[in-house]
Amino acid sequence: MRALAAEFIGTFALVTATCGSALFSAPSGGGLIGVSIAIGLSVLMMAYAVGHISGGHFNPAVTLGLVAGGRFDAAKAPGYIVAQVAGGIAAAAIFAVILGGYTGGGKVEFNTFAAISNNYGEPGGFNALAAFLMEVVITALFLIVIMGATSDNAPAGFAPLAIGVALMVLHLVSIPVTNASLNPARSTAPAIFAGGTALAHLWMFWIAPILGGIIGGVVSRWLQDE
Image (cartoon, rainbow, N blue to C red; front, side, top):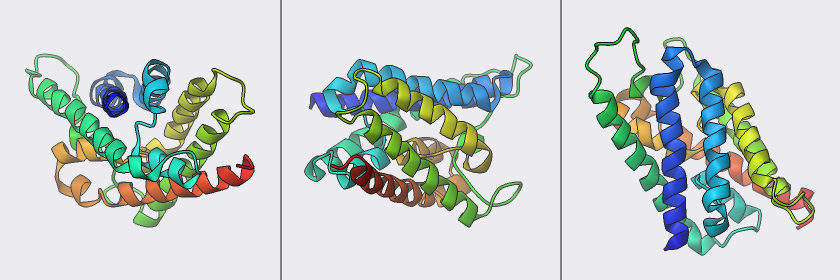
């Protein structure tokens, strides 16, 4: 139960960083750099805070990638995924209340849940193939970093730093294309409150990151000779 609570809290913090930075900070001048930094640092801080309890996945694609890489028990994966999704939804629900409490008295036009959700297609977006490919590649790379940084031969104590920096870099690369998922729990949380195309396209942001995670886990298992 402590491990599941740690996954809930860690994912709650990640989605808090996502919603807070993308809804409020980005329109106030933070831009995609501010969002990327906030999300990367949220994973870094929670990996140090609760990673020793649960392993610090905070992401169904990471959990399943680690299963594929031989680092995690498949029987525990469903519980982790439920805790991660629940943590993400709880955070998004709180931010829905906060956003609804904006009276309009300020001069900043804040984002909507639709604007911060993962999506593809028109208007102004990349097509489904481009979005799918982006999510597979960046999540595979993320798993390679995670498994490499946590291997027995890696410098001890620095894994959260490597993982947090990797997440920042991969968000900088992918926010213009898909709004950067890499994480089905992160995608599900705002899509529920956005509805519309964000919810209709949510399937991609489950399948593509999970496929990428599995690819990254298998490749890393070979690279690390495990």
